[in-house]
Length: 202
View 1 (cartoon, rainbow, N blue to C red):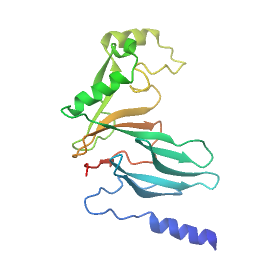
View 2 (cartoon, one colour; view 1 turned 30 degrees about the vertical axis):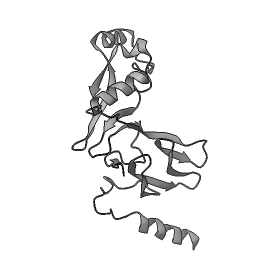
View 3 (cartoon, one colour; view 1 turned 60 degrees about the horizontal axis):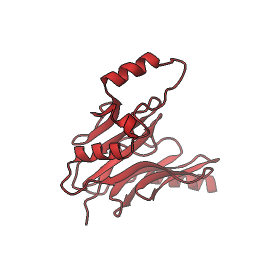
């Protein structure tokens, strides 16, 4: 009886209606998961995320520090997947991305990398995505040293392009004056990267 009740509860919550002005999830939830809307006005982010019960493991999202983080019932601390950073007064979004990349990357590497548009996959309208990629000379050197049997280190540091996963900086549409750093990983994430919403300051 408990299992039947749980099944109906999951089915009922799988189709959470979007509130006026909020985007709906861009895809169905995966098996044994349901979409839920999380909002933190202090961080300035709203997101559709999946809460999952796989029996041996439960998964949910929570806000930690400046980030939307994923938490596994059989794991340790929550892992940040979407970090939120302020755009400074008088600073453009593009300049904010450049500043953050330089702040978080060793200078020996950052001088050999450039900010480039991230265009893989479907980018929502009015959203800009960026990555940190090797410049032409550096890319040529890396190609000459590449070993096809090994996964190389990230060429532009932990905040640049990844050889075995997806991550990027995102400047969402809206009035929130925020830059996001989004860690998608290798598989389709349990958050909806197509409908991340920056909230305007109150």
